[in-house]
Length: 493
Ligand code: NAD
Image (cartoon, rainbow, N blue to C red):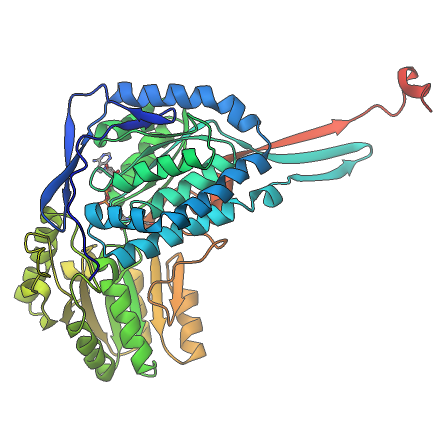
């Protein structure tokens, strides 16, 4: 495994107007590394005064930034792309330390975020506006204009990637941005701030206000914040959406998920077993695209046998990092205990997994597979957010689809099959925003946008791609008619 070095980063501040700025609040939050179970930093638990200070600085930066040509704003993204590439190791090690990912996994997540930076470099050609004659002597021109000061609130599980879904599109379109990162995994976002400055971003365009609920509520309420993007659990997504909308703000709030993979007996055994494993156990199951339920249609035992074999070889610290916190570890373990009591057959049990040497105090849980789970058990209905796969057995495709569409979420759904007809049926009938055919983690690649349906998202559109660009902009339509002839200019002809 990549060695994770313990380091204490001490007292951290907020980032406002291009520099670190101490908080007005005296309260702090302790950042614990899930590899060591020990404090690695403290961040301020900021208050409304901190948020207001950041908003005022962002407002001051807005006229000059939004007044720049979009090609100049996109230039910052070209620079940022190279800076991220050159500092991949540094950022990945920070993410591993505060989030618990493996370094390889952390690198993969940063590279996915970088795709949005790359997409943002194309905005000068995308945002050329539209113009055409609409009547005799009348022309209509439509442009996309920035909103002003906008904000993003992000979860613990992708500390750099999720902010990178928002920041490149929001600022390249001309907005100034306030980020409230997860209070569990904030360290890599300080690097993002430093990289943006190095890339040439003017001070005040990007700001970080650390903290928890008070800052989030302040973002929803602040009269000078025009739009809010949120990514996190559905419970909070719904609250943030409602509170932002009640204050007249535009909001897109991505929530939790319970993704299903439907497996039919004709599926290719090897790639399906590997696909099920990667989807359910990758990132230790702590991703909104993890599929934590496999619905087997008829007899899929050979695939399950191989899956269990592969899962036994999954090594903690190499294939899978830690769980983010002790509280999360206890919550996930409770789901396994409960499913066991209800009669699930435990094919592989991660509760007794041996931690890697040197990391015995970390929050570890090995790959866990529960078979013969019933669709209404908590392990089948709730977002467990850990390396736990529940297998539900059904006799036919229709019953399997009912299980998939019976859950309240709608981020992703996948089917493993070699039949085009089965794939077509599932992709047409699944009530989810992102569908995988023989792909367990069907994250669309830019410029295709990311976003789910149902309780996995509140608000219109998606968070990346063209939809994301639309979210961060207002449409302006100019309808112009110039008089046919006047005495004043006739003399020039
Ligand atoms: P979370 O909802 O606990 O926290 C997300 C953000 O909300 C954090 O910044 C946190 O400070 C803030 N917050 C938490 N409780 C709050 C409250 N009561 N009031 C106001 N703000 C509050 O989520 P998490 O545990 O950090 O992240 C995991 C969740 O995020 C999972 O549900 C996962 O599915 C979801 N997620 C979704 C997507 C997606 O694209 N749909 C992507 C990544 C993560």
